[in-house]
Length: 199
Image: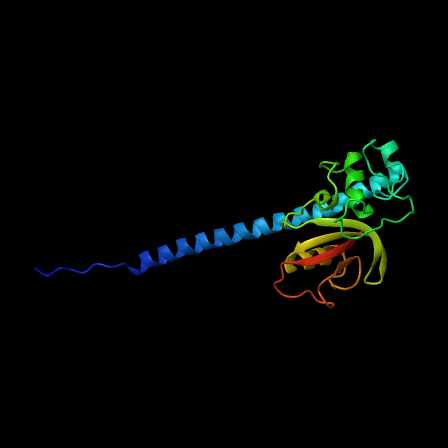
């Protein structure tokens, strides 16, 4: 007796390929949605820190971090800045830096969440990409002076997207400045970019 060899028909193969295509499309769309949510969270946090900064300034008529009446007006445990009208320091990595005290003052004032007793690098909040917001300071970048927020360990995609949304998309000019890009364009596929956002 002759056995007939069975196999898949073209219709069955087509159906399987369509199902595989739908599954891959769903996975890719899901990854895109996660990436968009992460970016939107980053942008929202940057805007909320700027809003908290200006709320503090309006309420206390001083810069957070530089506020020399913090222990009187905020909390007895709050460190005082020098009242010089600028926020000294850069990276928040030493407890006495005014750039670190910014986070403490904003927390003591109830404007951002977190433990106001955290000092030095422990005071830095983290962004959705896993790196720190590592200081708010007075300075100049890309030919612009003012109050800058340091955002470390961003991917090229996130940094460039933030620059295009807020500023001009050029890495070394404007109100979003890439500190380690080395030029006007964002390097491809980097995950450790440091940007500075002007408030």
